[in-house]
Length: 419
Ligand code: ADP
Image (cartoon, rainbow, N blue to C red):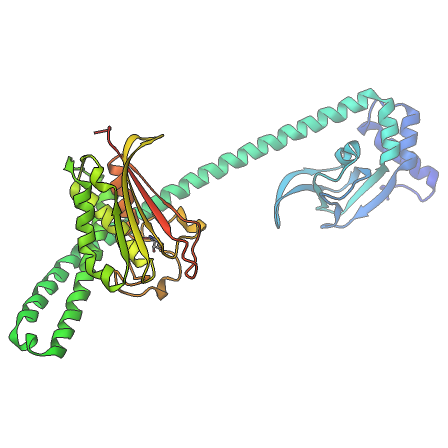
């Protein structure tokens, strides 16, 4: 009940009228009477929801005592505080003006008493008092402006925080990359010695004449070579990422490069019964770029095509000159396979360093075996090199499916005219 109000209806009505008078100042006596007659007193405990966002609203609330919080749902389970409202203020007018659902949730934060007035009497009075209409409009506009300002301030704060976190992540990423680079550098030297020594052991007559020993030493050498390749890839990538790359420009024959890569993988292709076709590359013009770097691009793309295509599959490498909308005239080389394909969610991420898809622990360890292991650096290196040449690289695939094998397509475009 309104403080000090006695229990007789006439007295309650009188008090409600006196309470509403300053809030709705300028209202005619008879209109105040209409509202006071319709007013119902309600009491809420802290935490009580007075009205809920989305529910239909057909009353307006005038706060007699206490305090309420107005919040809006921004996401599942996440609320955004809009403002607190206290004695002498009102809320809930928007839903009844719009004759629609509540636009926010209102919750009592203290023991709260309200006067509740129904839609019909309120709209009747409003229809007779343009000045009340204008005051409500002004108040709504002020609140909207406040809410806008609040949202802008929150966005600004979130932006500052995101920028700070981004810088922190960049710093951490640099520290991690430095650590990996230094480790790769330090470890590459003993691994190179290991390769040298195993070569010497391999050539020793005791080993050459002993089949078991030969197999063991070959195993050690293969492992050392693999480690050496991983360390080289890490160093390649860290050079590409940190120092920027110096592209040594000279005329490059792409057919020679592609055939070189083909030859390097000849044995693996045979072992895996993979058919490779290199189409149209002989007609390509000389490209002015860095031959060693470009070799690595196609090495990694063809190596991946081998790794992610089941035995008996097909790899097609196509070369042509195209007019690309972003780069102008380009050499375009496409490496396409009939392999497991790439899931849409992974396609934008596979060019990130150390990113590998699927269940990594299930990958086998060979570099050319089906789903063979790799450190997840090949595509990051390829991207760094292509970008250093001013070109573009991207992947296309309709999805990842080890049964249906939809295949993947990697496109490299190298501009002919920027050099
Ligand atoms: P990795 O050393 O793992 O091969 P890459 O950077 O070369 O690293 O490739 C990143 C990931 O992209 C791979 O782990 C693989 O999941 C996916 N990928 C690359 N090429 C292909 C391809 N031709 N078909 C299917 N998936 C591929």
